[in-house]
Image 1: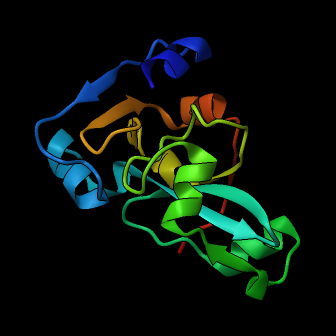
Image 2: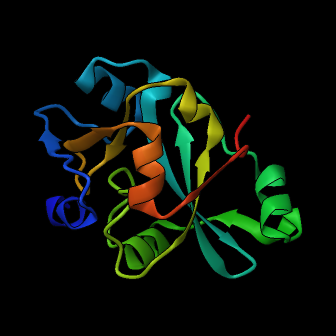
Length: 150
């Protein structure tokens, strides 16, 4: 994961923790942040195409909003299975990073993350995170920011 961050030119470093960081609550406890500062990486399948959603830890993905943004019926959006997550991202559930996937994934970033100066995202392990500002998260993930949570 550090290699992907280095390749992005971000200057960001992966932080490792003794305690698990595989849920938003655990990650917030590990770094001592607010729950909303944690970036939940959630893989959805929209009309057979994978879409990575980066959601604030205190928010929920809104599939109706996502469907409208993607131009697909709401009933054609679902959460990816654990096997699909691993296959498409290269990471297990709870460790999915916003970057460093085997192939580029369409990525939508929760606009509510912009209320924080620093956010924390998974770094490929259930004991690792990286910190960055929301604008940098958009740049390194190649995603676009939108109103996708409730």
